[in-house]
Image 1 (cartoon, one colour):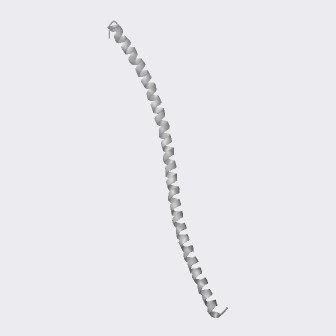
Image 2 (cartoon, one colour):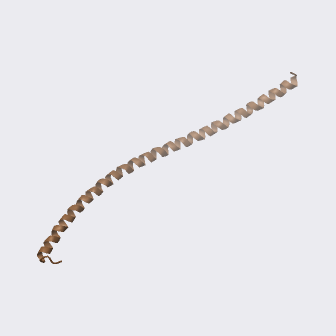
Image 3 (cartoon, one colour):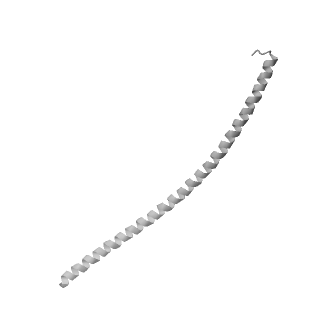
Length: 95
């Protein structure tokens, strides 16, 4: 190989190395951005998980309250029926 060919080969290798270094730098930047996005996603996931857990607790409490309300309604209906019976007896069965 002549000196000129060696020089061209070295220039080619140097350019390829520069391109490689630029590509590695770009990949590092993309990786850093990806890591930041992943951190935000993890945070959003934790918030979503906590919100769903709180919603589950609220749903359980609501179910209990509705059950209590239904029970109270049954008692109210029974008492109302007794009152209606008393009133009807007082009117001799007339509405």
